[in-house]
Image (cartoon, rainbow, N blue to C red; front, side, top):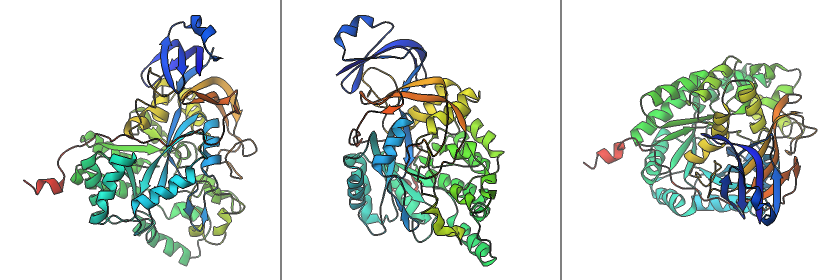
Amino acid sequence: MKTLIKNGRVITAVDDYYADVLVEDERIVLIGESLAHLEPNVDKIIDAKDRYVIPGGIDAHTHMDMPFGGTTSADDFETGTFAAAHGGTTTIIDFAIQAKGQSLYTALDTWHEKAAGKAAIDYGFHMITTDLPRERISEMKKLIHDEGVTSFKMFMAYPGVLLVDDATIFRGMSAAGEEGGLICMHAENGIVIDEIVRYAIEKGHTAPKYHALTRPTQAEAEGVNRAIRLAEMAGSPVYIVHLSCHDALKRVKEARDEGIPAFAETCPQYLFLDYTAYEKAGFEGAKYVMTPALREKWNQDELWTGLRMNDLQVVSTDHCPFCFKDQKQLGKDDFSKIPNGGPGVEHRMNLIFNGGVVGNRITLNRFVEITSTAAAKIFGLFPRKGTIAVGSDADIVIFDPNKKVTISAETHHMRVDYSCYEGMEVQGVAETVLSRGKVVIENCKYVGRKGDGKFQKRSRVQHHIKESAYAKLNH
């Protein structure tokens, strides 16, 4: 199958030029100023006049079919990737979850089964690690080298469920760092937060807004700082997930200024929503119960500055939707029982384009970098994905920078009964989307099928800083 994309403006993290792009089967095989002479020999022609030709988006943080809080996230790998494709995302990295005492391989097999034959776009896995005694480190190393699972998420939050202690974090960072793996940290002081939560409930404070009021920014900043210092001792890079506030960002900036390979993502909800959402009448604030919580609005400018200056490298969604009517209601009388999470995988690209490029906060190149290229580089997918280049996978979005749409639960494709951005008009739309050379979205309509997506083994990362505390003992 040969596809010619003609007359487009190609935008990558570093390039901006007009060219035609020839795709053969799953890869880009030729880029040229004018390839019209090839038209008789191709199977499909896509006219990208007045459009951007950009790499498919990479959402490095999603939770499809995830058990949590007594229920399961509303999108599975079929509906979630279907929605992602509509938004111009062509790869997600989801999270397999190890139960305490469980083999990492058993956990990985479970998530492979969840995704098999369902995904509309490509996908990979991080491994949520809740139990890592010394005898299980060999499994971590095998996942890195043999299974293409090169990143592992650990939690400083949710005691009794996901939280691991500092010794386990250090052990995991040391082992992953030695093998070219990466630890992703949910960095909040969950022990202190739980104490504040108990106090709030004792006082009768049960409304959704107390989810935010019991999770102070200092708890996130402390966790971020601790994660970075543990990584420094382990001689390992660290990736901070869903960073939400200036207090936490300051800790990342300080570490990067010291030369420590500390990476961080933020999410659209922290760039466009704020604490006032929790003050909505009745139980409406439950729609925005996610972790970390939404912050005071002034933090948004600081996060945008972090994205512009590369103190934040990636925008992911933490897509973990729970329906308002059936699932969020579990916490009707107790905010601590509201399932944490919100929908977002479908609108990441146009929200960031509208708020970033149209809003004159970031350049076009930076838009591509934070929605695709940086994630590909950090998580071992580049240059196979994350760029428009000869030899790269033909994950390509034909993006209309002028078209406007209004976000609404009535028209979105996520399997959830509300939108966090209901009624928001955004400029910039993924018009046509190719996943490994196959058109899956055409003129904003889905033309693919479930099972088009494939599991992607990822390469190791190389961001070591120095010998670990362990290694020094061998000298």
